Length: 233
Ligand SMILES: C[S@@+](CC[C@H](N)C(=O)[O-])C[C@H]1O[C@@H](n2cnc3c(N)ncnc32)[C@H](O)[C@@H]1O
Image 1: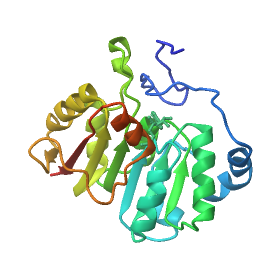
Image 2: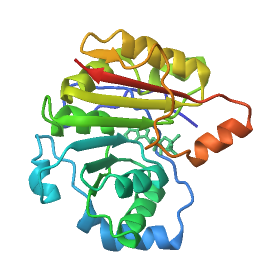
Image 3: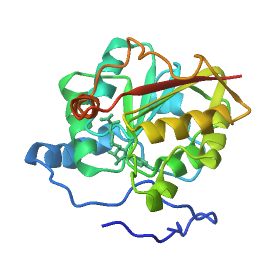
């Protein structure tokens, strides 16, 4: 069930339509325990003011933001492959956050931190302008019904906000297995004056992005997969 209401955060004046709905999905015992014991260790609480990520990660390094890491398979693999980058994963879903916390411990990842909060507010309130080296948004919820398209994350106002947080020369990398959403992404990203496409339109999947479970499922269902990589001018 989805609700059509616009949600207003009492702390912030600007209401926005959420790109997610809270769900009581299944959570394993291990994920629940990870949430109880590890959240404090590896997560950064949402606060409505710019955060000092170098201090929070304990080092200054290129800062990559991932929005909606799901169960965290991709985050883990990329963070392991790129130890010199700091990865900030933002996700709202309890089971996903629990799963990511377990991965951080089991793989002894030092370069990943989590914020469990709406990414729109995290970007707006906690991330300083011109500060991100990269943004990853992989398989965001496609909201396939037309009346739900307004919930899609990739829309002009949010991309304008996000682009302003990317440092000149930094990148935004999106992927989807929904053709209609891929077209929307291409239109929205191409329409932003701070961004330029690194490809003619869609980009080949870069080696650093592993094929995810969502992607494998999409390919099995006969969907294509589209990657988009734009650079901040
Ligand atoms: C379809 S899943 C994809 C997960 C993962 N990126 C992958 O490729 O497997 C999209 C995820 O984005 C999360 N999400 C959606 N809107 C969000 C928001 N505004 N802030 C944080 N997470 C969000 C959802 O909870 C969900 O886990």
